[in-house]
Length: 159
Image 1 (cartoon, helix red, strand yellow):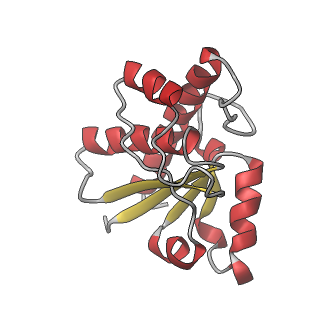
Image 2: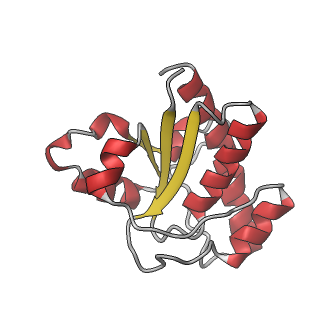
């Protein structure tokens, strides 16, 4: 398998996308695919650029064994569209924002919604847990674990 590059995208790149990145990196490592799959994350806004993930997400992810070693960054259409094979968005707004940046729809086939890969959770979006309590973060991690497992299967099957 050629090296596949996955980019997870949410709004600020401090909750959902770094959690997805941490989960996917763990799955990639566990399956011995470190040389085959590269994972990163970004946000559609640059408000949190340079920040570490939200401490609540770090804490909830750590309880499940995930490390979120990431500094927030804004999605760069001039680089990220060409660099990544899969651009995975967390909600409808992120999906619309990334598609709007894809002038001429040249990269449309690379842009997906995370929930499209979930097999056990029938949800329309990965909800933003920022204003929710602990159960919101746990729910997001549940959906992301399901979606990341489905995405890894998709990527490794060459789909």
